[in-house]
Length: 194
Image: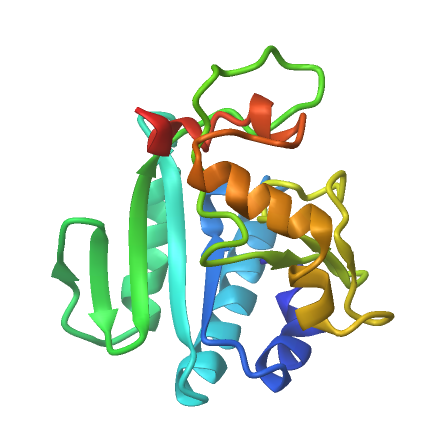
């Protein structure tokens, strides 16, 4: 969400279907900075929803939020009118605008121990991520681009997603095997592997 003010138009111009924004992860320096961040996220969400894009605010820090979630919810409630209907995954604020709850998890780390033999992930089967510099990675968990599959500024996206490496990853996950070292150390993938 920190780059939405600078890069939001590029996202909307790309014709994306859905944008997930992890609002729990911002480390504010001050209350003023935190509110400025939430305001920028909300501004983008309004524009995105108006353009027909689904926006999901993620609060994936259950049990570890230190009261922050209440502040975030209060801000969004003051900002977004809607039905605020609870469901199994979170809250439907209104059409195309949602909040999603989730458990805290360990981000993948190349130096962490492997999480287990069985690893399933939806990466590259129903989503992928494009980093700010155009690097395509299997999911947003690879924020450092360690599994760089290509760059959208150099190579057409369909070529990147059908590359040998991308196909091997997709096929591996279908068999509950991670072909990449980083994926073997991802705490998030464990929620699908149980």
